[in-house]
Image (cartoon, rainbow, N blue to C red; front, side):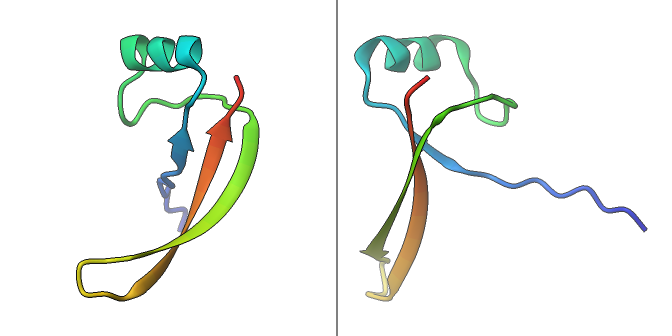
Length: 60
């Protein structure tokens, strides 16, 4: 059986004009095309457990 799955990705936008466009026109859950670079990091959650995360730093 085919099961469709949704994957969510963290996209970071630092360019001012691109950031304004994102805030104005995009909503959570929209399908978008983004180009940029992947970054990896770590953080501690509320319980102090070390977690890893992956983000895309958007260029366009």
